[in-house]
Length: 340
Image (tube, rainbow, N blue to C red; front, side):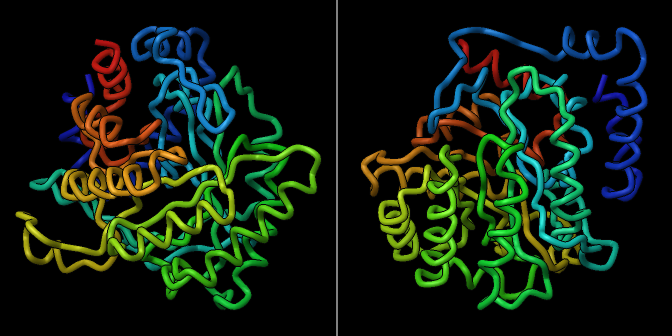
């Protein structure tokens, strides 16, 4: 079915059609029998696919990556497509509009996207209220947190604290996003000093709450091996739960799309980042002696791609661009492939 509609969808601006489709799903969700039909068509359950990672039980290892539902508005709709977990955000303390439009571009030849959204979201308080009323039905929810554009890096830790405190009661795990290329100077926070400060501060608050939530770090695929060595050391020192590898890349190597598209600023996702993402996963897994879990994301368009991430050392995987190019049936396809 998606193959029939995809050429039509791809005639429109990527951001506009995203909200057109998600808003339509929100309306259809209210029609009697529609959610059950979606679950019947796209769902796939098997006890052998269940996994326990950083103390949480996932009904399957395939998640929706952050960015697809920044404000937690479509979780129940996306859950009908069979995801084992959904990550919302990136969210910031205050609402912000993000970068100027257009800010998302399809590279069809490469089955990729370039985005420079810039953490556009309605603010953490809005997200927290959405999640408070959510029907979870065993679905694991992650909260991806960042800093506002106008917050200087030396004050960034305060933004992460505000998001952490606001979401603590309503998410199952946290992701610290310091790796988006679309907020000025954000990636500087991946350096050892500021990163340890943010993670240690959150961990101290985490353990003061009686219960603790897993905290993960999302990293860029553009880090050098020396920087990845620092990440392993930081995870060990701060005792965070794990790493998400990887975010989008600023590299434009080996792209076949039109030059005008390749010159667009922003983070590249999709098939071109697949191999580098897998390399980062494998390096972290081997360097750390598998001492922490990794969620693998980047260029997953098939069950084979997902299996490669798991074989490299990932415990779970997430999809984003592949979901756009392959359609909602991708989740079931991956799960059936992994089961085999």
